[in-house]
Length: 121
Image 1 (cartoon, helix red, strand yellow):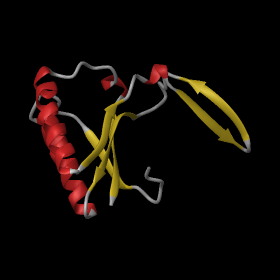
Image 2 (tube, one colour):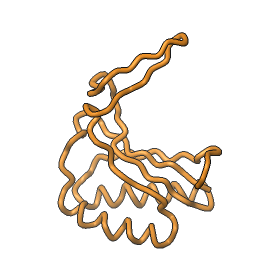
Image 3 (cartoon, one colour):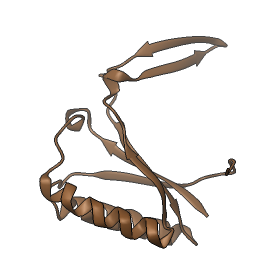
């Protein structure tokens, strides 16, 4: 089953430099999980000031350019995971959080949710 993991940031964390220790640890972690098939895709996202929200209200569509300062949380990155169960996907999320807390980024939130349907190419 496929899962979508989001890395959730507080607005003040957006654009923070990744500690060198975390950057050094991330490469082997990604390589290991790509090789095992547990990690399908992952990336960080550019800052919200470079993004646009498309909003529909009462059938009318509008756009709002970032930054999204009114937000309490922002998505800072994502990973698509392959796991045999929700529990296994959560364990991958825990490993990802531990990688951060052990390497200079003590405050991190991730959300793991099963992908419902979708199309695989």
